[in-house]
Figure (cartoon, rainbow, N blue to C red):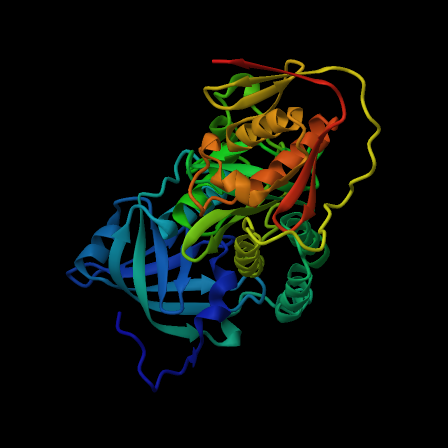
Length: 455
């Protein structure tokens, strides 16, 4: 079980070359030895890429392999490259077992997909992520390949893709155009047709949808709790979560839907695919803070690989930085950055009966739920001020208004206003919020409004 020396006949390989071997499509083979020197060989479900010097192996059973590993921490693992058919051998040293955290949660999600795809969902349960140091990587000779595989289809150069994506994001001048640029880039550059962006409400520890693409309904305003489903776990653990088989692993999707239940009549339908087969969620991280999650999904198995994950994580990082830059501005209004799609709306005549419930600032218009929380409190203020004759407002005055009980400055007010704008456009176009400049907006009521409050 010793690592090979410099005279080894096998070629040395780097970790990046092996990442396709760690997609879970082909089981790996692990060799350990007992204290008396007896060897043991077993199949393992998962070899997970941690970094250039470490991998994590799935700890599912307390079997002979596990006993040997605890007694003698050296092992070798044989991996098969699914694209080339080439074998690789890892020489490992066991360091520790993790039962929580980013690596454990990512492996748990992926193992659920692997298990469901193989009909082993009731057998495969991750007990821990065994972290191993990689002592050496050997590329076995070509004659050991079981068969010659055709070359995989060429993919666009990832650096060129990133350059085009970055160019599109850097041109955005408002949060709305920034989010649309990100969703456009996903569809155009990566062929992703179903995606959404969610922003974290730090005060409630829930994520709310501010933009989506490819669904029958936008789902703007739908929520999911931190820790629920692929999206919630990615936010909680601050790590990408990827699942490529969703037969029985739809429990992750069910968890998302359950995470949004309990609000009764204030529940906005979640826009996700009814039967996704692949999902990938990347946290939006900026200045060591979680701002939200960028989420994509597909009806195909194995739709997202590690290269897609790398691209999505990079896109999420730039998107998070852009969201931070678009954060509520207190500068004087300048050149208008009008929101797209603002067609003229004729004045309405039907009375709008607007009721606010003080317990959660939920707003109903003509007995139909519209919005709640911080965005609901903002709308109630705008309605009252508009009744007093005002139409022009600034982000700064909202931030400083104590009656709104806004969260601290790290909570993105611009995202709240975008959410409110989109909900009004979809559900109540007679109430209109339009950006007029940086940090400035206009609110109009195109119909008579009757206001009422309840506890």
